[in-house]
Image: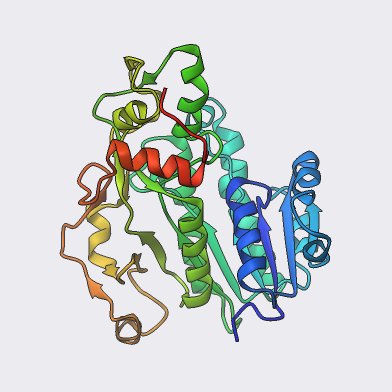
Length: 339
């Protein structure tokens, strides 16, 4: 028996890359789920998404037009829902620098609306998606997602006697997601260009399936207040360019506004409350509302050393050029060939 048996699950931003893969996985892995609700604001994407599912699968699905900025609409959508995965966000770094108020409305106020609607609807489990850019943020997108993370973690402090738990999942660049570096390089190489922002730049890498598995882990095992971080490899942006188009000399164009050379998922300041759970780290609240010894014993978790930090630049696991090519074939384009 799974925790998803006869449960209704809503995904905000459900028409995005993550949302679609999450819902496909949920239906395949847990056929006993009762209902899945896609909540998003784009009617065309909802229409296109409906074509991807069989009639039998669609019987369990509902498509709900709405924006996370609209608390009243969220409250209506949350009626009868047991669990929520919050994946809706504005996430393009340069767009955030130019349109800060729009990102604040969606990423921060939208998060607050999700929390309030979840309290009102008697939902039991909420997992919110974060980003590596929320750790020690230098851009507005990262700052809004850090605020969102803090809101979801703090929501556990005011749940009272409600049987609800809020947790956060944070990971790095999703291979093949819209707007990410690999699809960008695959498209632009046809023009004979390979623009690289900085020769030393690194990023974390995670596949959509790994991201989905992590969210499912969070839903199944959350105690309320954890921020989960996966142990995943890094790659050098220059190696991505070499993997995709070795015949094109990369052009170093300089970093964009709000970019870091290396991304970070656990800062040195986080080390005081970070625990190693095996495949994942968990950053716990400084004052958790559960028994810390019970948590550590249940997961056989070990506290990391003071001063520990988890950065894409100091990672112990790296993807080679050949590794990157194999992952592109596996997760993005089976017919991929380097140019």
